[in-house]
Length: 402
Length: 233
Ligand SMILES: Nc1ncnc2c1ncn2[C@@H]1O[C@H](COP(=O)(O)OP(=O)(O)OP(=O)(O)O)[C@@H](O)[C@H]1O
Ligand SMILES: [Mg+2]
Image (cartoon, rainbow over all chains, first blue to last red; front, side, top):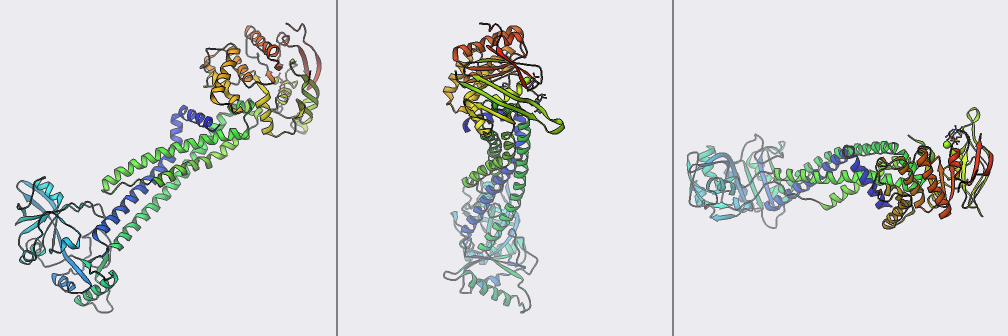
């Protein structure tokens, strides 16, 4: 009987293609929105935890200016640090390793190829602090750093642009007036927490960058790896104390620098994620509600249109329950169809979006199953009233209906 | 012969007070198993009302209706649906076939509700269509069939469920004389060969003459009940 009802429902949906399509549009949009949003959300939180994993949860980032969140480099206007600050912090027993960092956007030229990229100036410890490794060549040495010699490391993206697949080690690239010798090639790292391409980078000794590109002695951030056996909290308070002293902040003044650990960044990113998800969820819920009402409306029209058919079915012996089942199955079939199309559309949208945002595509079977079940539920809830109306018809009056 | 249909002082009143209409007013009627009864009478005399009650589509407002010895008037809608499903077949003046649905599927309809498996259903429906002379037309939709053919499909549908009774309310009302007599031939055959009890409403005396008993309604009462004249063999 149910199978029969499904056959009938399929036929009536196919018969009224356009009408069925318009009817389920609300469900399609609602489900697609949920699926797309959840899939993208899960992809991006996976991305966040992956990049936190890569950075290590024992890494602290020290920036000038009050605590604020945002992409790297979006710091405030407060007094920058100097290399002396970094040296002072390095003496703390709570600090395992640290890397002072300055960045500068420049065009890098090799032969007749050029690449606009981010130049990162730091110390040799930078690789260790950022958990990065070399694919070829060597790191620059402390001696080269101290002397500010013109040596550099290329990121994979820059290497591709300038040299293709050829080995860049030993080549010379030009950055403004610097003729810089490439001593190493960085291993590929992929996209960062904000979807930026982390391989689009050239690294060089910090003193070289300060002297020849920036023209000052500023340090914009300091990345700190906490010493083994020391908690992030302990390290934070030690660093905070040193920095307050060095920046001569009196008791009544707030910090004019911020210290963020990767866990905090991850939590912040994920909470942005869940706020967005919540917002989209409520949009989706409204859309599903509207979709359900659309189905109810069309089912009521359909019941009225088919009054005579209902009369015939009752006359040949259909029970009220069988008529109810038939119409309920039809509305469930409609909403399920909408759900399935919505799932496919949502996954496609999420696929495109993840590609665009360079985050992993994570299709969660539980979410898909949930969307499937939920659209069936919408069909049952909103189909029940019209189906009951059909089932309660008086056979004689139904047969007499024109 | 056992009594299959029995009206005991049955009345059916529509509306209330001023607007009250006594469609049936104290009707006593007995129809035995295997009979072929024609009902005649002027328009509005209560023929269709009586048929609807016999067919368990409607209930009397007074009196008693026994179907095969069982009082029907207090049965629930579902119980009446079961009676229709298993014992009754309808043929209507307007055919009442499902549009955009093949003849075969129309005939299968009562069998779906009887819960027959698909293969059995189809075999039975084909057999019923063959019996009414429509083999080869199984796939046609009502709109692709003539009036006479549509009424045959309707008879096949009534037949397919192996009913004890076929109720036909003006089955030839929409057909020309030639087709009408063909349909009557068919009904007579079913009555004679399969022992199906037939109750039929008609306005035409020559159609009624095919039956073996004639009941005449006037103003909600039975005013004549006699063997059909000639009882054309
Ligand atoms: N649903 C209804 N509500 C009110 N009155 C009704 C209803 N159905 C039938 N009637 C009335 O009951 C009476 C009998 O109607 P019925 O349909 O049984 O007549 P009939 O003998 O079948 O007539 P016809 O030959 O025209 O088909 C009529 O007066 C009719 O107006
Ligand atoms: Mg009538």
